[in-house]
Length: 255
Image (cartoon, rainbow, N blue to C red; front, side, top):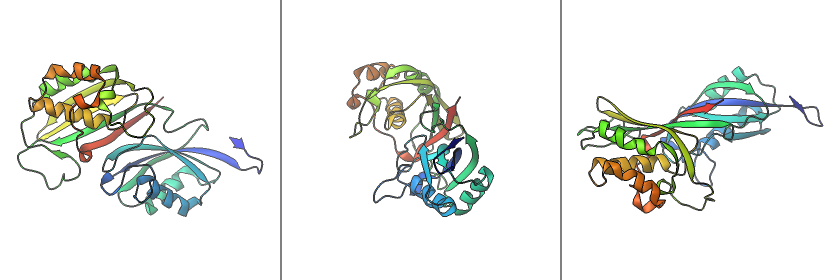
């Protein structure tokens, strides 16, 4: 515990949430766009006032979902974690839910304390679209050989410079090396799921990886082209950025 000059006790809480990304322009607060962070902070203000500082574990893009998203919250408010969880679930939009809230050490940071993250990408692989999956999975009507794609995707695994798999924008680029721990492509009925875990991800990295694998499925790339695309370190050589609707932040791993 830490005491400030006015004897307030600063606490650090770790909150785990999930959200449907369809109505949000990602996590991070933006001008003229509704985001998950804005919805969360609005609900939080109504419960404990504005004496808090929150950090999210990751940026997510417009339309991307989260099965698990973590937030660290520093506040002097004495509300117990279970009461805060219940109150937030009452005041948050129905598209956001808090699954856990607990105290953590003051040095914990939702983003910088993270060891790895796992994303999944869902593809509804059927000639007929599913009305129940609109906005929740990419509809891809052409044949997909998940065994072949799984084999091709192993080229992503390991420590590489993933410049070819990053949308370059105004952000400071920095080190483009990431360590991909695993990548799998599996099928259950008509649902094909791509699952990737890494120590970090570049902007649009998973969606470009998926788009590149779909180019392999279409025969526009060969399965063994991916190592060369990585080596090029040039975005123009990789496939297109897959739609946001199929992407979910699935797990966040801490020590």
